[in-house]
Image (cartoon, rainbow, N blue to C red; front, top):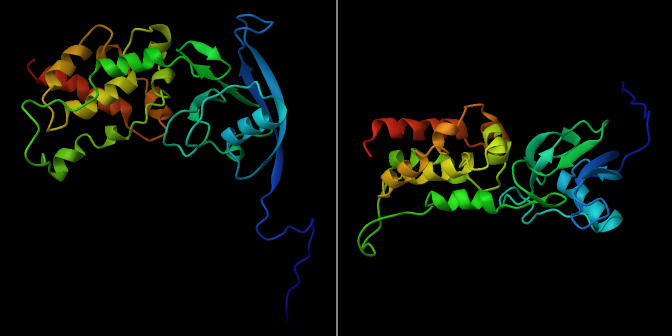
Length: 255
């Protein structure tokens, strides 16, 4: 005897992606607009697909509803780090955040990351962030001329700093840090992570210099270990652990 399955809803074609309606509430800031320096919220109702991400929704607004909406994006695959923004109050990459993973029954809020000057809408001035990054010397420093052979590392030596090589400089960690919000001089988690990457590289010879830089009053000791940075990192880097390892290196190494 064969059981019969009763169709209770409309037929769905094989491979069809379901759609849903969602409201995107975007924080707008137009420096030369009629509101002057005042920012405001702008709501957009969109019909989206289950495979769409927040970046797709922003594209839909810009391409179909309001071409003046301004935001950064590049690769759209979570590698370049260009589209870091606050989504429902948390720092995320818009290209990695699926709409269906959020509560679409309520408006989804999108605003610029905190702690950096807003240029327009979701675009912030990244220069203070990159100034700290440059200051920690994010490059291999060695003495002598060009090597005559490859600088060999063991798997164990590489493993020491492997996690911090994953940073994509999206600023999600730094702009999630309460210390950075209140003290614009603090180096911030991203700069310390990139210093860690070279401090613990067995081939590098400038660890002492980097530790001296981060021993400044606005350096690594300003970290309050709130774990905001670790939670915000789209690459899963254990940032708070890396900062603790830099602190330990300062105490145990003579410099």
